[in-house]
Image (cartoon, rainbow over all chains, first blue to last red; front, side, top):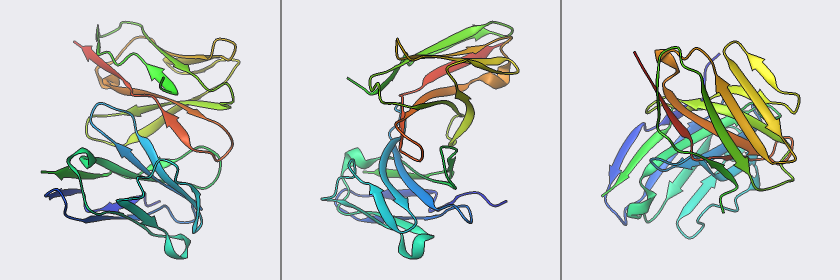
Length: 112
Length: 110
């Protein structure tokens, strides 16, 4: 079974530029998550989708971050404009139900 | 105060040692608990769920104390391949978001 796919794997941008990350969850998984993991910290939930509806986006910095999950499958996370403190790994995860969630390999962002 | 707190370590132990990780959570409404393992520059992967009755999976034993809001993970007979970061995780409800601790780094030496 194919896992959670993410792209790009690595991105370096200058502050104030924009960046977008793409995620394709495991087929059939209704729930999709975006987590931010800063070096030395645990993952922090940014947004959770159930199909194409938002379940929780309480920790998403909405002035600069946006996410969508059109048609309840793929999802895109965008940052505009980026700040230095946005340097992190952006992990997409999906789950069929319950709590067993499966993470993608992550998109590594460096803002310089 | 962080919702899930762990000792960040690092824990440096010799092969064959027994090592224990502790974790506390602040929200008494938390219902489900897990340990995830994260290798360097890799994604987190589920190691095991944690039940009130305690549960064991080979060399790994997890315990939950709801009264003290405390979770533990015991690794017996440590292997070099156990070197990783161990993340303590709490969830409020079925299908709810997972709250991760900052992780405890383990390094097993020959």
